[in-house]
Amino acid sequence: MELIEMSVVMGKNRMIQLPEEEVRVMGLKEGDELCLSYVTDREGAKENRVREFLVENKI
Image (cartoon, rainbow, N blue to C red; front, side):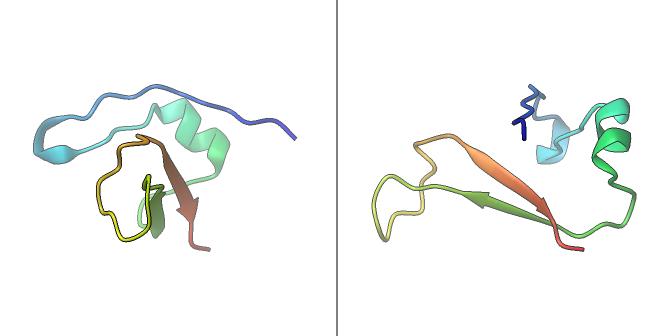
């Protein structure tokens, strides 16, 4: 198992655009429902001070 990381830039209207080749390799397609999760630094907090996200395909 290997963890793949990539850098992307937040665009206009808060859009995150993934490189086309990476989307293909990940098996994602238009219309897929994704879940974005993030870690907080303490219980009850909403701020993402850890600044890490997990994106999951809800297949």
